[in-house]
Image (cartoon, rainbow, N blue to C red; front, side, top):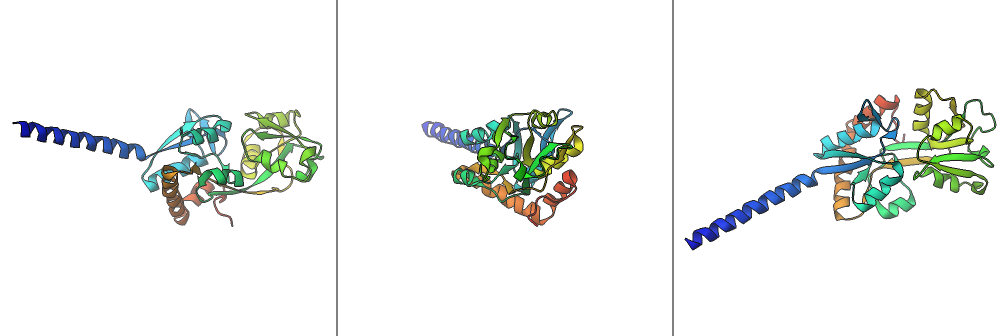
Length: 256
């Protein structure tokens, strides 16, 4: 009798451990993706639905890698901190690879190739490119890499950089700031979709490569490798290019 009870206890313990392991495995299959939900056309909310290029890419990655994608939206400036603290697993919000970020995070391969673009109020003939930003006030999104790009210019000490959480385009259109700098793809789309009187000023002044960052630990790099393999497959079968064509009418996922 005692032996039967002991056997039953061992069996129960094994079943419990099995359930716990299954739950843990299920949890490991969820990829928590942070994004702002306010960066058209990459990630935005329309009719209460989160959508955009980033959303489509991550859903395709999830399907290819067998991962459940859990989107979490927050202010752009808080995304890297949330990743660092372990509240999310990666950030899909056009995160540019920089030396500082590479030293801290494990990046996937780039999935967007773009350039930094100066945007001004329509009709502004005083600023025709990055070389005209000396002595001007220039807006950038708080937490973006564009502030760093401006700081690296040879005349950086002559530029008044202003950081914004939102309304970056509106303040340029209203003349409260002389220009803003954003990636060229988003800038062109914003001008096309917005009624604001804005225009591109000159050519992009810096190439940028955007990728998905993960924490640089065992769990983070394992997830990175799964996502990176999925991105390779999606690039090879044309899915990335197809998603890009849907949102931009061109392929921004290839360096060529």
